[in-house]
Length: 90
Image 1 (cartoon, rainbow, N blue to C red):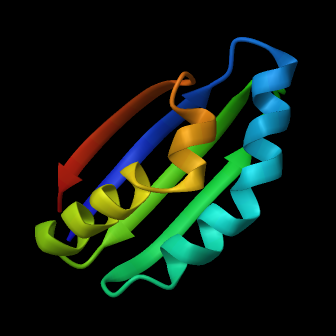
Image 2: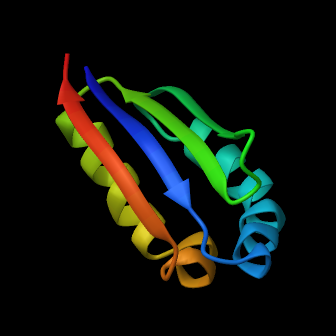
Image 3: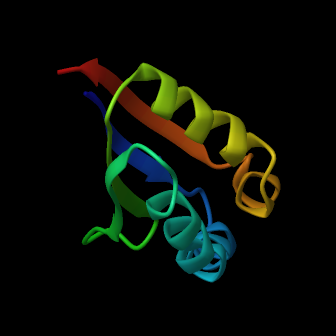
């Protein structure tokens, strides 16, 4: 399994609003992907920071998720937002 964990860190409230606006569709599409075991993005106590936890069956499924995401409205809208993630092969 491949697990990604970390944070999405906004610099402004406008970025946080962009995340909130695009997140429901991003979660829905990600959870529907073949090989997605879990996909959660939750706000933290800091309104500019979101906790991200993803689990995929294997590297191939994770790679397909990354490819789909890079071509999505989510990526276009949030590309400038800082991502601090660790990817683990568990």
